[in-house]
Image (cartoon, rainbow, N blue to C red; front, side):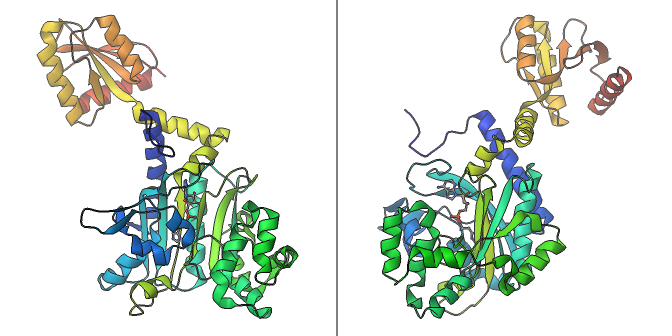
Length: 424
Ligand code: HAM
């Protein structure tokens, strides 16, 4: 049996790659002062119905639980974050800088870069309305990608502001109450057949040229983005950004600043996306709490695809996978009567944080050496008739040395390190 379409098995190397990604996400988020949290994987469907927008609601893995509740597996984290902040905000000083790593589920059409489960890093700042928060998040997003080995020649952050389109609608005296519907058309323009897009725009009294013409305005000089661009320049990150009004984002709750990160060649779908959602917490608390918020999420699927296309990022990924598998030592039991002593020694090493493997059953010595290579052990420690003397072979550089197993493990490590150094 295969996994369900759009779901992945994570075999050991793939799991190691996933752990490498999570470790980098966590490390850089902590560097920026974000603290980790998480929410439940299942929520009332109601939470997404109102907050996420039609597209995501149609993609929900949704069912009735045994108590007849209408529940859904989480397709994203933002509604949960807003719900949690609305009920726990008294317990935390603002602004909150929170991050989370977790799995999300969307019943998407099968396509490259989009699966039915994926992992996301979510980073959000709640309670700060200045553009400095938007820039802080973008800087974090860019630094994470740099940490994986990407540069400004690989990736681009396309930034926009939904206000620009609201002004577009009001300047033409169009129905602002249909803004969500309108933004959805703009969001999908590059993925919609021209005749369909034209028909949809016609219902607003607009043509395709109205949209493309507006988007060609020289936004880089526009006053709306001046402060944002100034802050990006201060952080020396201006090379990573491009103002692109066609980025409006598919989710319903965004209120202003929005962005998406793409590979420069635009071969892949978005790696990350986010923006401001200043009204969501107020909606979820029935107007009791009004806190501005901004955040983004980065997915693991496109990130992994993109990493495997660039030699430098691919090398880092393979090195991390290799590191995760490496053992410090393989204990070769050359004399079966010494098995109890050998096992005891293995445990002693493991308690001192060595990664140690040995054969669980009596096995030929040659097979044990083969296995020591297979598990990428640095040393083979041979235990035989000379016990308590042990022979340590350096499997990476060759050579061997005899030591006493009675010495403390820290002493053994010191001796092995200086032995290796002297042979350099
Ligand atoms: P999103 O753009 O829907 O935003 O997802 C963010 C990222 O998750 C995407 O750029 C993509 O890398 C990844 N992603 C989304 N869906 C899939 C999928 N089906 N398969 C693989 N990867 C996927 C959000 O989810 C917002 N809640 C982000 C946010 C946080 N906004 C504010 N705070």
